[in-house]
Image (cartoon, rainbow, N blue to C red):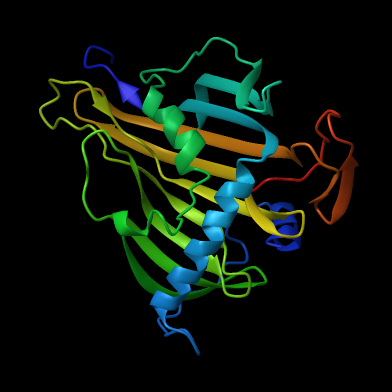
Length: 283
């Protein structure tokens, strides 16, 4: 978020978790224990290979992304940014974005930057592939139950900041069975700060992002949320809240069966993206 100085299972498990109305209603305690029968480094290598497959598959799917960012006065929203767009393929088979809904922003005190879009498009649906491993320091934190899933937990941070590059910093949860990331919590770094309040600042919230199993194989992001007070040196504290939804996943150019909430939705190639059954997101 940017402010100028002059401005004052899961699949079924996730569906069940949505219905509970609490993002961490079924989260168990973090257990400081070593993984059994495998080393932390072996887990990292295996899930990073799976993440490379995930990224390649992700780039072959069409989907809808619905972004909502609010500023709040206490608990009352006083400004909103909204953007809904479809990721589609053009006649040349290249991915592109088709805007569905984009009213004028009424956000108070903050404005959206290109870095914010980068976070929503690349850090929220973060994938840590084998190609990315050299960039990051990855520390095993323990094991934790996320609803019915047993997960390995890792803390992730860039080894060094290269000028012009953006990175994920936070925590990831890896399903112990599928060895795929099913949950992330983190933000885009580096930020632009100025303790003296003389320069523009660009700060980012932590997004908690849930993945759901699509086509019985890949864990794709479906819901992400941030609710945080950002501390600007000159403008002071700004309370922002954001919800990002990914829906209507459909593999480009083939008949597929997509599961939403345990129900299959089928569409033929070239047909409009299917609308999944309504799910109640975490609050």
